[in-house]
Image 1: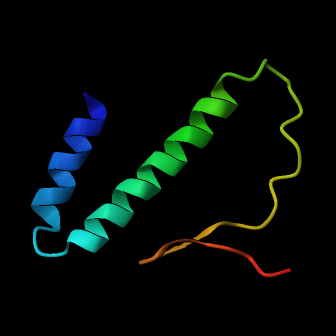
Image 2: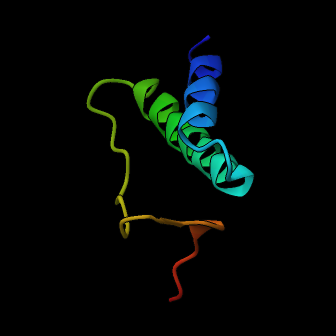
Image 3: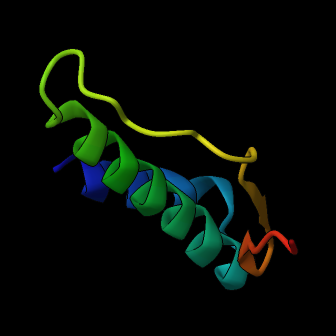
Length: 66
């Protein structure tokens, strides 16, 4: 239900740019997956080193070069 509301909102706000709408939804899905994973960890669990701040562009998640 929430995802359907997000899709509707993104379609209204970005009606002319299908590629951007797709990437915005991919960003929401990516962030939601991380939140679900972290929220299901036991209280006090070591979640590891967070690493560099993710960057998101019009083509999706930008991979960091090491």
